[in-house]
Length: 287
Image 1 (cartoon, one colour):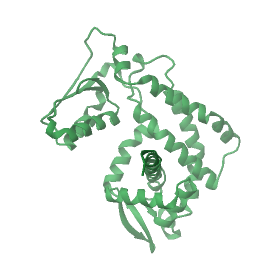
Image 2 (cartoon, one colour; image 1 turned 180 degrees about the vertical axis):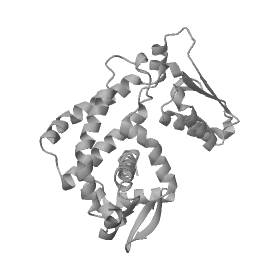
Image 3 (cartoon, helix red, strand yellow; image 1 turned 30 degrees about the horizontal axis):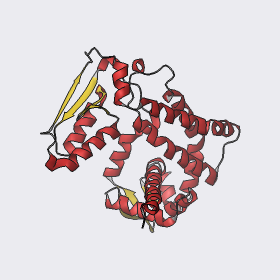
Image 4 (cartoon, one colour; image 1 turned 90 degrees about the vertical axis):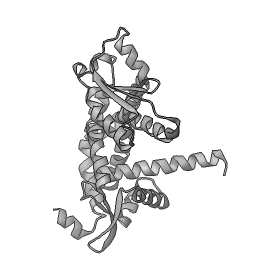
């Protein structure tokens, strides 16, 4: 298979996993931390995935410790594991409420590490973890984020067993370089701002239509899952910097308000549609 052929396949695999993870957090958790296999496949095919891709994504999540086989009311399915619930809960504040601006007076968390070449794979993992947590790269092996990210950084270092190679500091900025300039050089804040603007452009008309006539059933479910899937990666890129160091027209607040309006209209009918794919006795048990 050529590189041109493998790229779309990899993209499809990533899309399937992203959509399934969104489904677990936005649908399965509210419906009791368990999903029927057939019902989940049916719902996710409605959302545009094909059944083999869904089953592959579910299998990989099970292999990674997110799902465990569990039968309820005579129906085969999967339950969310403590690992999945912990990870999903950790992302809730970011996904559903976006990154609230940090308080400038709280200062900054700095992570510096010197990891030997023999642990190169873990060095790459730590960089990826810090980036996903919203840290910006100030320089070689030097990362920065608002001070509130200290505990998250400590967890990332500890989980990789790199305590002996990393140092974490918290404090105020005392340098002479303009702080805003330094921060804009540490993150691609222009690209993050543009992603919020793109979300607003893509969904402003939808918000108006929903206010006039809210959908129900499959339309509500597919729209809801799509909105959450598109949104969930945006605030993870946003470090939640203090407003004092951001441009006056920073678009995150407007994008967040739009997302929350869409969720308010779509969530209830979407979950009602999804729950109809759960066994009746399981649904009654949640009532």
